[in-house]
Length: 614
Ligand code: ADP
Image (cartoon, rainbow, N blue to C red):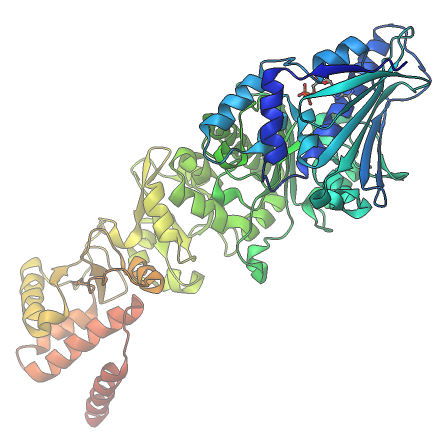
C-alpha cells in the first residue's frame, strides 16, 4: 500500500509555475544560482541552530554543498547538508505562498510587457526557477531535528506534487532536476562549473562539483579588515580583477547608514585605456549577501570611475530590482552617491598619506578625474581637490594642488591663475606670464589640452575664481623709463589699427607686458585660443566654429614699439611691414600662426633691408 500523498499547488503557485515553465527567458542558468543560494541559506540556518545549542541530527557532518551532473541521464543534482525540511515544511515552503513574494512577483510579471523571470530569486520564489529547465524535480529532504524522518517530494510542475516517506536519508536536502530536452546542456559539468564560478564563487560554504572543489576564494569583503592578510587581498584582486599585477590602491570599507554596504575596491596599477585597449567597462560586481546580483554592475559608479575593479555587497537591494531597471532606481543612485563620495574621500586621504603612490595614480588616471570635473556636477568640488599641476614657483616636475596654491596666495591676490602651454619652457617664455613674474604671483602651468576646459568647468576652487592668465586683468604697477607717453601710445595704437585693418579686432596699450613688444589676446570672452583648438580637433559634424577674433596689445615701454612710433612718420612702408611682423610674432608666441609662409617672405625682406644699411 503506497503511502504517497498527492497535493495540489496553491492557485498562485500554479500560476507562477505556468509562467516559469513556458518562459522564453534566456538566462535560464540562474536556476543554479537560486538553488545553490537556497542550499547556502540552509547551511547557514543549520549552523545557527547548532550554535544556539539545539540537538542536530548527524551533527558530525559539516554543512556544505555538492553538485553532480549526469549527462547520460540528463540530470543535475544539488545536495546540501543544511537544515533540511520536515513534512510540514515541505508542504509549506514548496507548495504554498510561504511569503508575500509570490504575489509581488506575479504582479510585477503581469505589469511588464516582457516579464523578466530572472528576477525570480529576488522575490523569494527562486526554487521554482528549477522548472524553467526541468521536466521533473525530485526533492529528498531530512530535517536536522533528530526525531524526524526523510521525505520525497516530486513534481512535474503542472497541477501538484507528491509526497512520500523516504528511508535512510542523510541530513539536508537533495534536489534532482530531470532536464527538459532543450536544457540538457545543464547536465554538462563544464556548463555548471562556469555558472557556479560566475554567481556563487563567494558562497561561504564549500561547493563541490563532481568531487571537485569550486569556491576556494573567500568573500573577504565581508570579513574584518584587521584579520585579512596582504596576500589574501592580492589573491582576491587577481581573482576579481583578472590582473596579475598588484593593485595601486585598495579601499575596503563597511557602512551601515544610509545604506548597508560592504565594499572592496581596487585601482589597477595601470590605466588599461591608455594601453590601447579601448574604453573600459566598470568591473565592479554587485552582490547581495555574497551572491552575485549583477556582474560589472552598470550605474553603480559614475562613468569616470570606470577603471575601478572589485565588489560591492549590499543587503539593502530590494526584491524588485532588475538588471534593466537597476540603473534607474533611486537605490542605485543612492549607492552610487555614497560609494563615489567615499572613494573620493579615500583618494584625498591617499594624496596626503601616500604621496608617491598618489603621484603614480595621478599620472595614470588624471584624465578620468578631469572627465569627472567636466561631467559630474555632484562631485566637482571633491574632484577639484584631487587635481595637480606644475606651478611657476615650483621646480619643473613638481606638482601642487589647488588647495596648497590657495595657502600661498598673498592677501591682495584674489584669483587662482592658470596658463595653458605646451611645456614648461613655453609657459615661462609666454608673454602672458610676464606680468606674473614681475608681480611674483604664482601661476599654475597647464600642459594638458583638456585643462582649460576643465578649469572653466571647475570655475572656482574654495571660493576663489580660477582665471586663465591670458584673460587676467592685471597691470604692472611700476612705470618704465623710456616708455611712450599715454597719448603717443594711444595714437600709435590708432595707427596700428588702421594699418593692420581686418587682421585684428582692436588695438590696445597694454599694461601687462614686460619683455615682449606685443601680444594677441582673444577678444572672445568665452573661448580662448586653446579651447578653440580643442573644439576644432573634436569637431565632426557640428556647426562651424566661428573664426577667431583677436585683440592686439602693445607694450609702450618696449624699444621696438618706441622705434616703430619714431619711424612711422618717416617711412610708412617700412613701419607697415614691421607692424605686420610684430603681429605675426605675437601670433607665433600664442601658437596661433597657421601658415608662416607670408611671414617668412616679409621677414626675409626686412632682414635684407637691415643688411643693406651696413
Ligand atoms: P526563498 O529561498 O527566497 O525563501 P524559495 O522559493 O527559493 O524562496 O524557497 C522557499 C523556501 O523553501 C525557503 O525559504 C526555504 O525555507 C525552503 N528551502 C528551499 N530550498 C531549501 C533547501 N535546500 N534546504 C532547506 N530549505 C529549503
